[in-house]
Length: 252
Image (tube, rainbow, N blue to C red):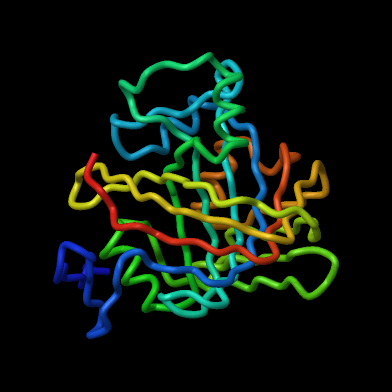
């Protein structure tokens, strides 16, 4: 899909998508999020990164982290839609080295470990066009069924007439998550950019075990198999009410 954004003003930054102005920051007022995280081969994960500027953040020798998040954006500047995020935890090459492995784990728990999104399917076309044009996110319009009405979150992602994955995770939690600033890297016109996303939540729960994933007959499912899935997840997280703000991307 060809980007259709046009920056109108530098402060605040504005973009026009299909005749509708999107002003930065893009605000999320209400969403629920179910996320599972796996330990994967850092070598296999590195092979999925699109450029040399990023490297997999290792939590153990030759081991990195993969997350799959299912999101229901109920009130968002870009609309009401479902989304699946498949992301790897990364660092920019040349950044000051930290304490190996332990530092990666601490940064992940603090929300300070950046990500690179491999796939970001949504089920609405406007947010797809905006995400690609503004942030360089790899959004596609696919079939996503995300059900949180029972005692578990259930997500099915279908693409090109095939199932990519079926994921179920535990629901529930009573913790509040104070606002933290997350970062993700993407490429816009071949150049690396960083996007900051401030988020907070209530109704949060962290769970060990209970994640079930099935992979289908799609090339993206095979990509996940190359990382060792399906296998038990390290952990999962549920956020019953997430709020956030996406800033404009900045070139690195």
